[in-house]
Image (cartoon, rainbow, N blue to C red; front, side, top):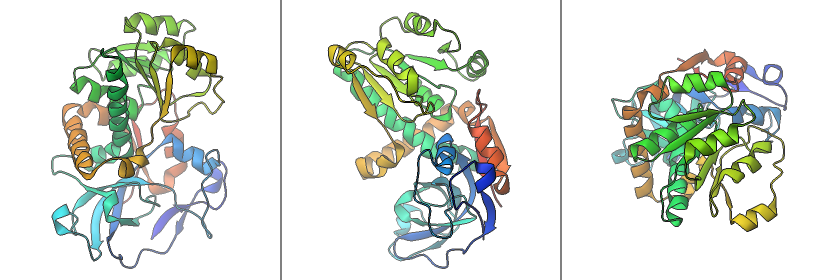
Length: 336
């Protein structure tokens, strides 16, 4: 089978190749072979390939990718048919290894059956980004409830897939959201796909004042994937006892956060990562979360309408698109 492979860290265009690799032969107990048809490309994928977030490289090269959408081809022993994991079933692949290949061998617990009314492109975008969003939403609600009030939730990098999903989930719950994006053009794009949302561009120096005005009451929660030098400014916008939820580091610079400010204002800094969903939530909660995400896809189809598809060999272009500013939809790698 064909796959994207890299054997050393570096610029994606230099180190990624489209090569022939051994295909999985047969699934073992509680394993499933999936023919992968779509995979969403994330900014973190580029960080891993470049070695900014170093991941061990397997002898002979590693195949990137941990999520996607595909069709079940073979099922190993021990997989309960009542789960819906049967040959021919479309599934989301969540947190497997090596999905930038035509086939992947995945543990059964990493697969989520897709309802008939949700298409592959939407399901592909729900995967890591949707699960990240629902974990952020749960953490935000927990942090906000400590204060006994419902203040606005501030979402940064709101034009991203995760940002749009957090906004949709919050609006489904009747919560007020204020959004920031990194450019005026990004603000215009987001205005075109959301309703009833206050949007602030951080392109201007006075953006913290504009955010404070849009929020009214200081937010108890900020949801941020940027970090770096933006983090202390975001902390300064929080109400006392507020929480900064971080789920990435688009700005790779260290954050100059004052521990004195953290202590005086009793701020909380909390990290959220999608892979922890499998280990930190009950089976019942995961079923509820997935149902919530599919319902979000039905209620907010605009979140998944803008995307650009790239053939698997065009991976370097897809990675560049995933890191573009302003972001216009998802970058998706496809194969037959």
